[in-house]
Length: 180
Ligand code: SF4
Ligand code: SF4
Image (cartoon, rainbow, N blue to C red):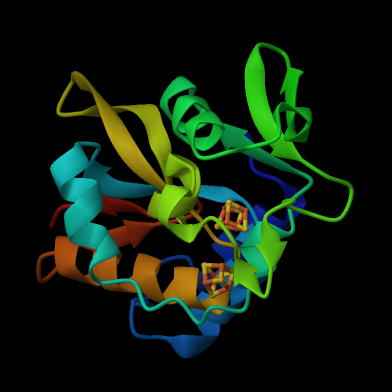
């Protein structure tokens, strides 16, 4: 795997150290991976996603509603159109549909104005759709997390700490757990 300069210096700084409880390590991870998707050591199933979401403590700052494009799937579109969405608020790019606006999501008012109909991506945020991975020689789908905010970082830490067994090592830069 090709490391970025920032990943390489993170690796050099923490290589061989037991850093899972090290606050500075997590602050450094946040600097390097802020607003990027990071793979979590958990297989992607709907049940796992729902279980992990229960651990999330969102601070409701609204920052994640300020992306220019919010991806929506066919079910989201149908649900949103049925509840009165103006089709003008939808756009398409490379075969993917989005809610789009220059200033972030068009439904961000004082909080989300379509909260009970919000798209799946908003419902599961900061968790993200599955990514291809390998475990024990088997191809699997793993959960990813968007490290947008400190709350998302806190969730990633909780998940990683729960998934590790005593003596396991956390491998930089992609937070892979190496069993003891
Ligand atoms: S997920 Fe994070 S960025 Fe989004 S509202 Fe919650 S705390 Fe803010
Ligand atoms: S639909 Fe609601 S939760 Fe989703 S980005 Fe827009 S304002 Fe935020």
